[in-house]
Image (cartoon, rainbow, N blue to C red; front, side, top):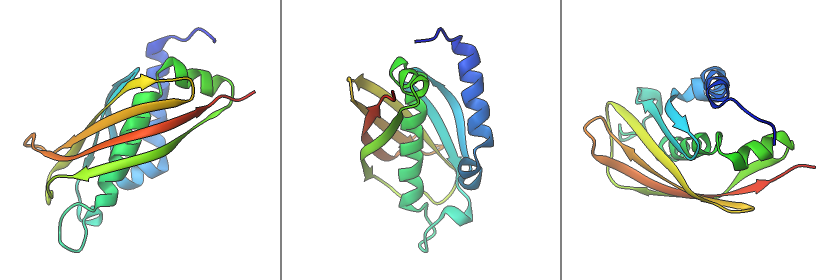
Length: 147
């Protein structure tokens, strides 16, 4: 595996996230990340609410999925995937919705406690501005190195 300067890699990945059209569309922000962890946020706006006036569950699921992906990006396992032009994909994403949110922001703290040869396990907690838990999620990701 090639030698990487972690700070340059982090800067490059952060710049990519800032310019990624889907992240811009939903207002996804990367607050912090490193090998095996991330902190991300979406500020709630009317376009992200369901007809009941609270954040749509799909927005929460997207925040968890993208937050977990951000937590993977600086791991050695993902760098091997990137360098070999392989791919990583979500196999399973489970979300437990705990309470609605009608205003403010959603902050997702994600971590990757286990990365095996082909499968990574990750979890996330989404909180509101007041620190109350909005949702919890967990995911399994498949790592497929290239040739």
